[in-house]
Length: 189
Image (cartoon, rainbow, N blue to C red):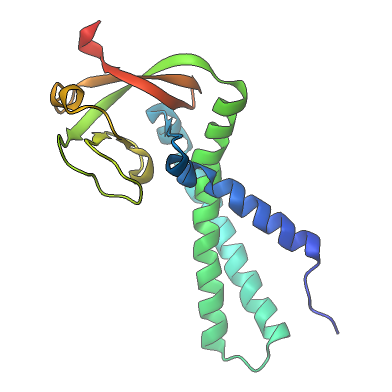
């Protein structure tokens, strides 16, 4: 009995995984997307629900599949395989709904706009944490950790900002989020 999954299933899973990773990889290519605070607050419960459901289905499916394909594996090994892929499924589902969908909409249908964000903190003259170089980071309130920083603004610009200032972010976007082109403090108007 052949228990191998069809090639189209693997190609589909790989394509969806790559699509879900686009928002996380985009800053490495100079593209920064910020979801709106409104989008994050409205969609959070749905994203968590879908993510947990996908994680459960993947964990259960992988664990059962491994029992058929590799009967010599211990139950503990099968469970770890299921939990590991379940965790990846959670991240995939969350990223797809919370970030990839609004970023895709902004790329395809966005128009020039400005969206206000609230500054949580600034670090003048410092390299922020993260994989990519982020000089003089501006951390924004009420956004998820991977999508709450603006980087590489001048020390002069960042030095003018303080906690709870409103920062207007300009770029191509929709009510779901914006692809960052520039920013300025609201109080400069």
